[in-house]
Image (tube, rainbow, N blue to C red):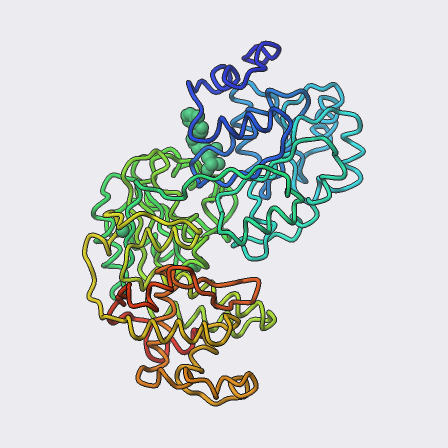
Length: 526
Ligand code: ADP
Ligand code: ZN
């Protein structure tokens, strides 16, 4: 039996209080809810932990009919449906794991209008069978969760999300929402265009997570470095991410021999064991879960005190999402990453050796560079991360390693001016590889064909080696002086702030001696 008075609960705030027991909306939740209750569309770009679920759940409960929720993972659906049922809300998930009898029950409650939420996979919701099943059932709204999956530039592209644009025609007049914690400007535009949400109101909040302290170190003796990081978190729970399943197993075993209670988690493990380890992590106060990226989506553990990366994540978006699992309760938390040449070489090889076309490879290289830029920056890490999401952070944060322990730098203003001039003179149409060919005076097929060999900037950077130029461009990126245009396949564009550098009004400091030098940087491509 429902725990709340369905008829009386038409008002958003009373739904919030009666169903969830929360006294007030947080941040912009109230604005989103008001927009959708009134029948409008919404694009919700809030960081992890901001409370996106309530943004679609509350309006669905306020409006007549069933709320359709598109979610990419069956595990995610299961968790949300369970959580809703606990609250006395009538929710069900339609997916391939449903038995015959369960399916009949579900159809019956749907036909009788006795369902508040129906979770469905993206491939299922667009089928004629699903449309037929909905029939004349009233729909409160359609919420598309993890909406970044629609974008090829995002970190988790899922082709089946592409068809969701059709929902606009199939369910005219039904409010639609897209929700995600990824909001770099390019992915945002992609979501709006692909899902037909041009008329939707876009809601964003700052992506800053002020309670998270960032630290990135050069890998030297990774296990000892990890141990010393974990020693700051005795008696607390956190996640250690590794790239491979084997490394997950080895690292977890080793931590146990060091007196740190640890369990492994990866997709190659038996289902039951994996679920048991996840449950242990959710329940226990002091457990180090060593995992591949298979772990984390949809996990709502508020008191994760640390996240460590022993390998470089796939992109800045992935890094932000994975580190964002720390400190959802708002209390001080630490994230730490060790990276080194091996990562850079391996990633470069994976990209170059893959089957993707040249254009995609260029985008992949640009993504790698954006992440390396954050690793190599001499400036505030938080500023660099937020700059990636198109956000400016006022001043240094005072809560990252470079703010707390300033690094050795060299005055790179002259080098920066040359690097920026190469971007400008060649028309903001080229990626770092070509720009460095121009700067170092490399006469090849492309520099000749585009007439760049005749420009004054050609060879203007012969005084510095290629590897230094690669680092210079990455650091310009981190400093927000240039940006990567993915639409133009990784071409660099100047940001307005670059003007101050040209005019000698702004000094540019580069970090000394990073590990991405020599052969490694060359292999990574630029
Ligand atoms: P997101 O999907 O944006 O990562 P969730 O929807 O999982 O975030 O919410 C994160 C946590 O915050 C959940 O435990 C949720 O219950 C809680 N929460 C969300 N909104 C509120 C609110 N208005 N008041 C109190 N707690 C809230
Ligand atoms: Zn900082």
